[in-house]
View (cartoon, rainbow, N blue to C red):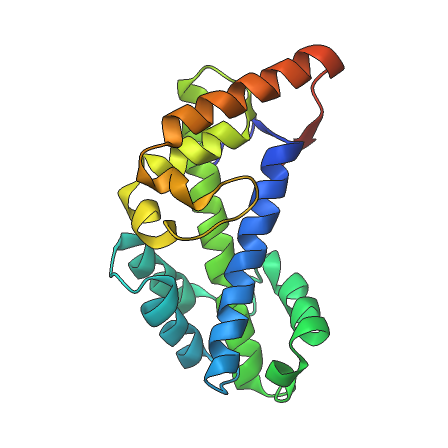
Length: 196
């Protein structure tokens, strides 16, 4: 369950933006390296062989989201993903008028939607556990550190303010440092929050 009453700090919004961008860039780079275009099958291939090379529940749920994705219920990411592809990966858009391409992009946007919601939910849980009304970078770091599947899948990623080593045991020290910094800034300047 997402937490409708919680808000994101500016730093944590940056982390989420970077995380989403990396999900999309990795998919594009994977397909470009294999001279593939976006289709339902190539998105499934990306999930199985690059995003989740070790099979886990996150990968299974992503595959499930692909099966549920329909043009009647477009993800929030769909128009953003189309614009991003046209601007940054025109070679992946040569078949943009085809139904297969549109379906592939729709599937990828559903995966992004699911992965962001999942991380947002875990971060919200971490925030609530610490009796906070905002989701900060430390909560995102803690959420990933305490979830084995996220650790398996993203241990070598570096996005936003999260260094790759957070998955190897430094998470709690790093999280406490970020909490101290964020609370100090909030105390001095007032909370700069961005609603989800």
